[in-house]
Length: 295
Image: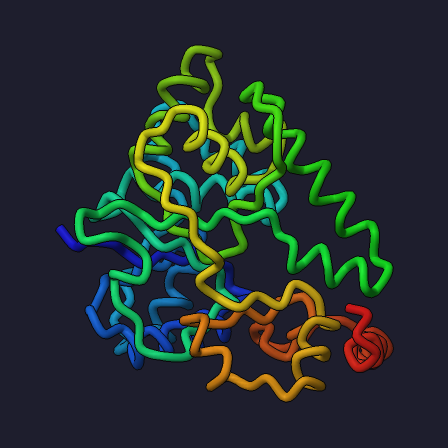
């Protein structure tokens, strides 16, 4: 059994991004950890064609969902993609070849060599991303974007309430995150099953998969809690990237603290497959907003 697996859930729109991610994994995967990608069955042939030679094990999302005894894959398929993907990501533990997996988004890219010991201890205990997100909230304050802070507090309080936990609001992200099957099992055994719920039901109540995992870990203590800062530098908003560029912070500098970077796909639309969608007017508007740091 490998000590940890790498996993990414994707869609056809993100094919170019997954190719970029897979190329970075092939280049920097010092421990040769297995890398899995899952996509809807209808996209599987497309990804198989373009990921050949990149050491990627390809799965259909439907295979993952069918491994869950209480999830209706047809109902999940009818959900918006940004919601349904959270269910698929969080159910991968049922098929994962290891107890832990690093859950990556398509717009992730590794920027330096990495090993398993960055994500788990020698005995297999995961490092859990867990902070109060002060860096993001401070930047939001500086730019008078109070909605960012309000959203963070509201999302945290929503899931905390399900577990009857008061106290500090934590962020259990951003991606990528290390997830352990024992935590997902404890959530199902201790919380979902007694109420006749599936994880799809939980996401229907609050589409915040990282918070469901994190709060379950705090509540049921299925694995030791070893808090960690984020593994990747994540640019949630274009203005954060603009700020770093003005500070002349480049990838070699970031690599001293992070193993990778995430550029949000919503403002990296030139990476869409097969091409950037929308009219010429919307294309120009996106670039203007990007230039002004408003995306």
